[in-house]
Image 1 (cartoon, helix red, strand yellow):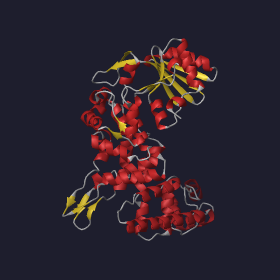
Image 2 (cartoon, rainbow, N blue to C red; image 1 turned 90 degrees about the horizontal axis):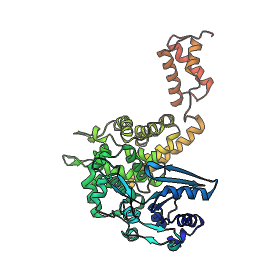
Image 3 (cartoon, helix red, strand yellow; image 1 turned 135 degrees about the vertical axis):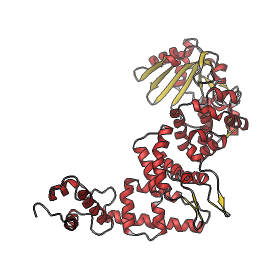
Image 4 (cartoon, rainbow, N blue to C red; image 1 turned 90 degrees about the vertical axis):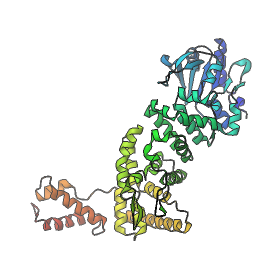
Length: 472
């Protein structure tokens, strides 16, 4: 089925008929047309009319009846019609001009050619008519179809003007290249590099939107590599850029932690669509540049990079305008704990250590293990297999111990309030010590995770502290 056949539906014919009745040219434009050629389904449809798009939208909403709702945004000259699970957006054709210190353009009425020329990339600068006389006709003045075939991201006009006018388009170029697996045209990419500093006028929220789309792509490392190579990364996430490079002392170098991180990120992406797990992968070694030390005996060390990295996560999320809620805390937990399973498999896998890992990771244990398995990037396949086999052993032990001891997210069988009531204590260090002793006894396998055993152990601990029950 050709793209023009794909719009041969009652909805598009209705829009075209209404536009005809108002003597307006009307076109499907932009991403919807691009996705028709890529055979990607979209429920967001953009229309451009020569003349007021708002008037056409209001007429379309009336025609579609009670199931349609029209929202008008007069300041932007646009209107949106929501109909069932589809969103139709209408705007009048326009031309734009920009001032150097803002991405907000001065907008004037224009022709279809004006409207297509102002668009970011050739693959988004195509239109298809929905008017009856030329229904389905493709308007492609910048060879967008050819660039789809060539898998190229290229601007319709001078890329320096395109990116200087609206620097967010630099992020969009990288995002489209990542999502689609396309290459950015050399001249276009060079212009991004020349204009990278212009990204400073873009809000962090808009940048974060593009980063989230990059992170949700099949191979997110493509985007981060492009951000590094064009110079944007130093403005967006300098902590990640600082990971690039290898330092050598006495002929001994460490691995390039930037490219190692991207390998881990792609390994995780192949296993999971969880975008926050992917952020955990991206940031798991983020503190290595600040913890890197040379030791004459051990070589390069990165002591406590997991703990320091976890402390860096809130600031990074705040700077990127990512959510500072449970999503951030989840990423922080992954960064802090990602060394624990590796330490387990390097030593003997004891029940106590596995219980403590289950307790600390809680419901996130499976995703933590996914991250840790993805973190094994050695080229030594024997070593890789040994680590993965050991991780499989840890997973089996987790299942066995969880079935037996119910450690994941457990609450101590005796609460602090009960301890205070039994021994006549007010909130104090002693109460905390007794609670901690009970928890450790359960995690170390000294007592089962049961109330009677916990009460008996509590009395033993309290007696050693010269504490006695009020009602023995």
